[in-house]
Image (cartoon, rainbow, N blue to C red; front, side, top):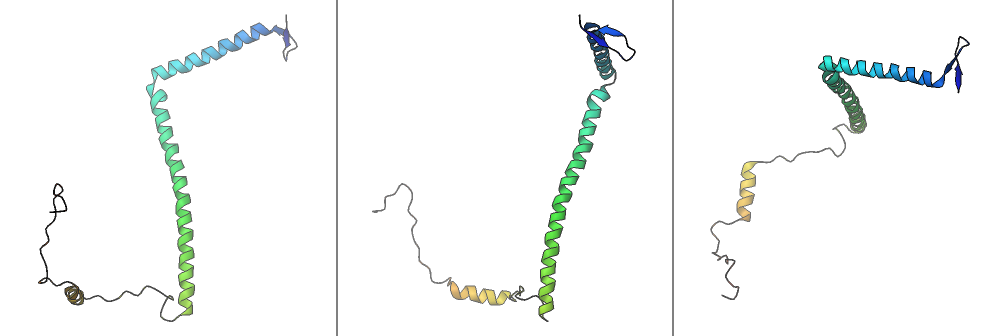
Amino acid sequence: MTTIATKMGGSKDVNEVRAKGADKLQNSTSGFKRWGRKTPFVRYGLPMLSFMVFGTVGLGHLLQGSKDIAKVKDDQEWEIIETKKALSRTGPIAAYQPKKISLEEELKATQKKVDINDYEFKKIPRPNESKSH
């Protein structure tokens, strides 16, 4: 039979060591199961809360990364605008300059394009009619 030397210098049978280890493991797992049955919070609530907390922290970390990237892009665009402002007195070169629009002018332009008195009635063919009629 195989023997294992212990720290004390004695020897034990391998099967005895395995049996004791298995008993110890079984006792610890059954104790954990019993503890989970007695307190359902440990079995259900604690894992749920830990997932929620760690998930929130993880999502916050991911979102912070995207915010940092957006901030860098905004800073680069701002630097470009500032350098262009420095080159011209009126503001950024080729900046957007909106055309001033008047409603009266738009109405007159539309009335010139469309004459409401000049129209002609056109019959719209029905789906079951043939085009020869």
